[in-house]
Image 1 (cartoon, rainbow, N blue to C red):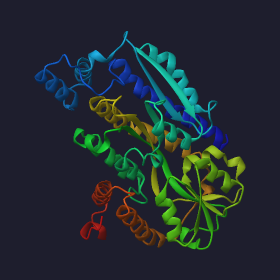
Image 2: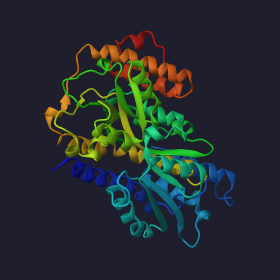
Image 3: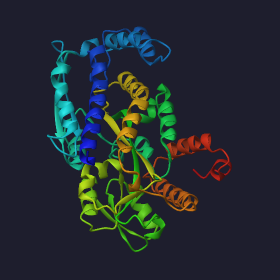
Length: 390
């Protein structure tokens, strides 16, 4: 089984899981995707009670959903709500994400929804459409592309901020607290879920090169959306060659550059068959890679967004196991072991880049502080824990 086949199966299952997650809430409440304005027929005291019920994590989900339905009962038309979800699939309409979302159209009708799915192969075009048109009510994109919508959420993928998946999982537990909703929602957009899709790595065309620090003067392919990775490349004395994810991988596959920084999904999409046997990836990840569900605030009320975030957290381990299963199929010989001293040196480089981009306003300072506290939860003796600069 080649890497392309592996990824297709993996993305298909991931996509189904994500869409089914949305559909579960559709089934429970016809208020899904209703405008945020609440039922004007409710008196203020009743409205406050219903809002409190939905946000109370100590109550059963069934009770909270009943409260949600009553809170937005005036927003259905002929028992159905028409909404459009736009999803990114690097393989276009024939791809696994497209297939999963299109399969959901008929299913969603049973939940009182008329769901229109639009697939974009070009993530940049999808983002532009969402920003400039009303075609999409919600989008499913990679976390690296979420900066225009929510800087706090986009900073989850900050360079070296969450070194391991356990750090990301603890962060997801924090973000599922209703008190964090204000951070994840603004006047225009709301983050309704974050799911892991693995790590981002440094890929090398020659496995004998085992350190990013050995790349001064070299060209490194990188995604234009990730300023952190771009600044990292500059910090080690190399030159970034920017493009979208597929462009970067193709540039690397065509041997136009000796290295690239990309989520593992990029390599798998391209397929191992297009790479020579000397290609490998350094085992130490440099950031977490996520998919994030973003909706228009006017279309997705805060109570619904909260329930979706909790559901994403509930299924975190399920997503992680699927990622691990697919990555485990990559041959051991593909992985490059870096020098032990790289860990400390690169940690300092990562921190320098984070602080620089924080001060420039690209990274969110509060998310960086939260990430530091999470790192220190696992490694409290680190210098950054006793002398914090983030």
